[in-house]
Length: 167
Image (cartoon, rainbow, N blue to C red):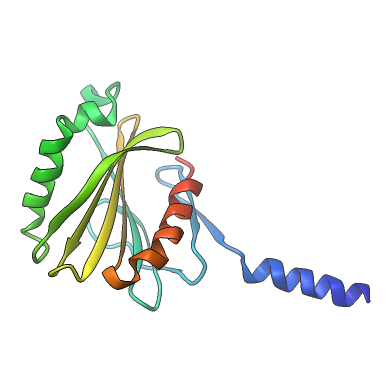
C-alpha cells in the first residue's frame, strides 16, 4: 500500500516539475516552463532562450551599459516612457512586419523596477511582451513570444516565469 502511495506522489510531483537554469555569466536564475526546451542562444547579447514545439519562446538579452548609468533607475535610463515606447516600435519596423504598440507600463521583477511593453507583428498574428530591467550596470530584456491566438493560454506561463526569476 505504501509503495503504491509513494509511486503516485512521485508521479504527481514529477508531472508538474519545472527545471531551473542559472546564468554562469550574469548570475541570475530562471525556471524553465514545462514543455519548453533550451535552444541555442544566437545573436548579440542573447544569454538565454527556450522554446516549445508550438513555436512559443522566451529570450533573455543582457547588455552592459555605460558606468555613468550605474546609479540611475531603469526609468531614468529610458527617459520619457511615452517617447521610448513609440521610438521602440518605430525602430522595430526594421526587423518586424507591421509592428503595433498595444500597451506599456511599470512593474517590479525580482524587486527591481521594470518597464514592460506589449506589441504585435505580422498583421496582429504574433504577440510579444518585453520587460526591461536594470540591475547595476546591466540591462536585462526579457521577451515572451506566442501566436496571438494562443496568448491567453501562454500569458499565465509568462507570468509565472516573470514571478520566479531571480536577478
